[in-house]
Amino acid sequence: MNRRGMTLLEVMVALVILGLVVAAYLELFSGALRGAADARTWSQAVAYASDGVERAKLERGTLETGTERLPGGFERRLERRPWPGGPGLMELQVVVTLPGGGQYALERLVRTP
Image (cartoon, rainbow, N blue to C red; front, side, top):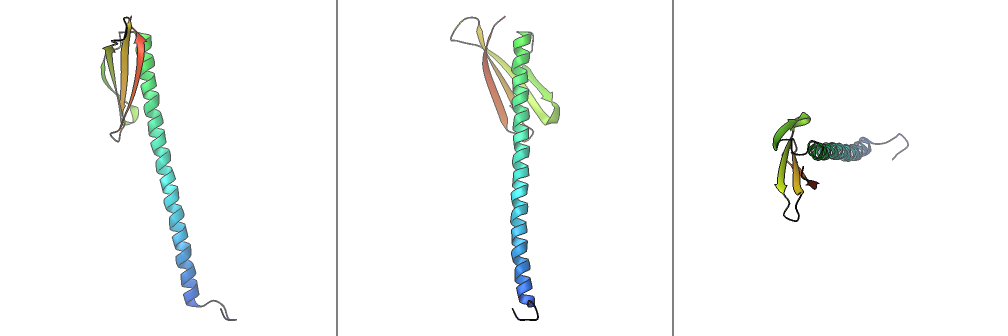
């Protein structure tokens, strides 16, 4: 650098370096936003599955097995099977299908009515 200031080449190199740093930060933030959105979707799926299990426990046999559509593009499927390990028990499985195509399954043993 001379006494009159920075040369045009030095300014251009500084701008390129600054641009690369900004681009890296923007990529980092967009990845964090995607991760937060995925976590929110999975949390909603877990809540829907837990709600399905609790409803099935409360309604003991009156809740129909099948698929229902839920807000946000989710679907919930409820299945009941007799538990071979002991009388008076059944296996309850709730499968929540996510809007993007993934699935979350929750299985519980419950008493039969």
